[in-house]
Length: 211
Image 1 (cartoon, rainbow, N blue to C red):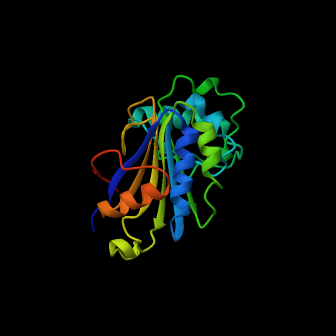
Image 2 (image 1 turned 120 degrees about the vertical axis):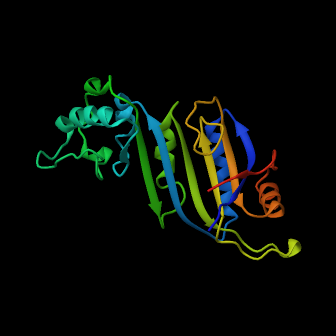
């Protein structure tokens, strides 16, 4: 049990720059296992995510707001036989007819969630980052870090990863910020700096408790 430490290695208003650094860090990993992506968006902005067919919807609302969301989404479900429940089940963006978002304009925000396993980095993430706009969210990759002989560090599979917090100052922070931060997840200060340097960056400040 426990958490990683997360080390900031870049803060920038340029999401492309943040993603490029994340890819350089991922190229240092022995293996990239999975990517976990989320964003909080206005319900009426769901059409921006329409191309992400496997993006799952989760509620960001009180029970009464969720009832309103289910009621508004029900007419948009492509399969009339599909029933929406109060927790939205596994409803995906791709199962909705999002050509007219006007009925969603008065609703509470929703959480978009994507999970990608055993696919090349970029397969899912690039479409997600193209859609996210000013929404708050994050992309987290679980990886296996290589051994670092000169630092006497074995390879690392637990507490290992790369993350971009998008329009947000930190992990699980849903308050809008004007920039994006790239983080290295590990348990060793030395490994974090070693990885950052090889990706053309540096650790910017003190570590934080991660995932």
